[in-house]
Length: 102
Image (cartoon, rainbow, N blue to C red; front, side, top):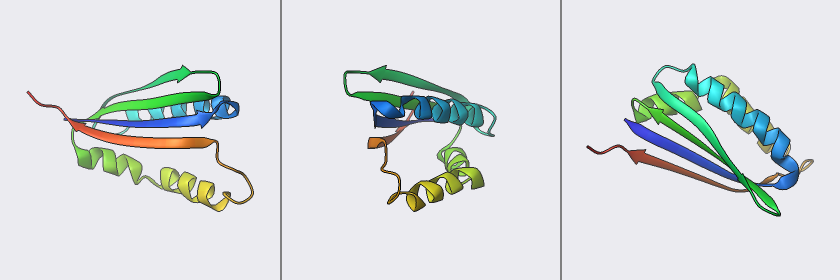
């Protein structure tokens, strides 16, 4: 089993957008083969918000298959395409993978 985390530190004005995005991602993970659990943790301070998606998977391959699904790849293409016209609300993105030891 592996645990995947991805943390997004975002500008405060993007809070509602990211609440919707992470809610959709959690639901998508929970319905995906190999996902054991998924949740989103949230914190905010004066200037930023932080969203951390935490998911448990049977294997790394299961998580990679979720990342490769067509709608996820399209989201990334769209975000990259709109970079010049719409500045990103994401300040930092940190992804980590952990193996569960006995």
